[in-house]
Amino acid sequence: MEISHILNELGEDRSLYFNAVAPPIMQTSNFVFDTFDEIRKAFEDENSTYLYSRGKNPTIEILRKKLAALDGAEDALVFNSGASAIYCSVLANVKTGDHIISVEKPYSWASRMFDNMLPRFGISTTYINGTDIENFKAAIRPETRIIYLESPNSLTFDLQDLEAVARLAKSHNIITIIDNSYCTPLYQQPLAFGIDLSLQSATKYLGGHSDTVAGVLTGKEELLQKIFFEQLLNNGSGISPFNAWLILRGLRTLPVRLAHITKTTEKVISYLKSHPKIERVIFPLDKDFPQLELAHKQMKGACGLFTIVFKSDSYSQIEKFTYSLKHFLVAVSWGGHESLILPQAAGIGPDKFDPQIEQHRMARMYVGLEDADYLIADLDQALKIL
Ligand SMILES: *Cc1c(COP(=O)(O)O)cnc(C)c1O
Image (cartoon, rainbow, N blue to C red; front, side, top):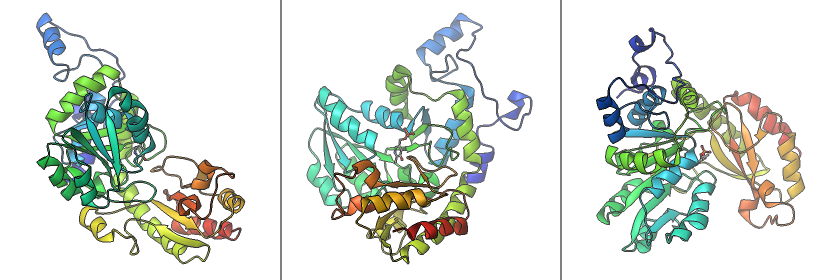
């Protein structure tokens, strides 16, 4: 399906809402029934009709259709955060005694779930370096139920060979889940490689304006129905109609924003790579990236998020540089209009900071919608501090 059709037309029926161009925010908790028959049917299958907005809601339905089509998926579910998309997709597919294989250093709230919560229910997780398929093979046990991927991750951008992992998992009856927040369906289509469930933090590129927290999960209808009934309805983690509407609005400009950011990022990275105070830049489509060939095989693009490694071995210099920047804000998240920087040193603290450890000298950077020259001039004046 063409992206222009998906983002501008799919799922929208203006005759249902006064021919308004923008779909309405259907801000209602419940829906009225005309007959007992209809009520009974709704109770029997809450996915078949509008009953209560914790489940189905017309504004959310439009979003679900678009997000499913973007991923080439049978269906999509939308959550009130990316974290709940992670939680629900995993929880619906495990029971006591099961085992999970996860790539090392997944998104922090995924690893907190694997490390702190699931062991209380007798579910264990093995972390592996996902850059080598042999590590997956070696970690599989008879009780392995899920392989959890994040390709690329959002600090070192390590990739997994999605096609090879999906093939291996299928031969062992293991469900594969990927966090595809970095690429979005525009730049990577995990389901086409055989991955079962693809999730994203819609807070990032899909929303795109740093004003909404949301998550999305796509895959086969059968898998998603199970997650809808066992998780989303039960723990009430669906999105609100208003936030669904904000994501719909963000989606309209997704290709334009990604295209702009892609071009700007290229220029910013090329400036940083040639700067004497920067040891290296880590970016999956950079010619020096160790997994470049795999990146080209499975990704159509990469955009605003990358990591720099400072040559400086001084904690205070890194802090001073960071706060000398006028247009890169010091904050978590990414994918919005504003450029960001998050040095690892900030989370480590001056006492534990050790410049011998490369990761301590890393800063994650995000290029937003500003112009390249505007950002480069800012970096240039701040780098003089180092
Ligand atoms: C932000 C993020 C999440 C979590 O999404 P929220 O919407 O913040 O709950 C998950 N994975 C990645 C890679 C992220 O960047």
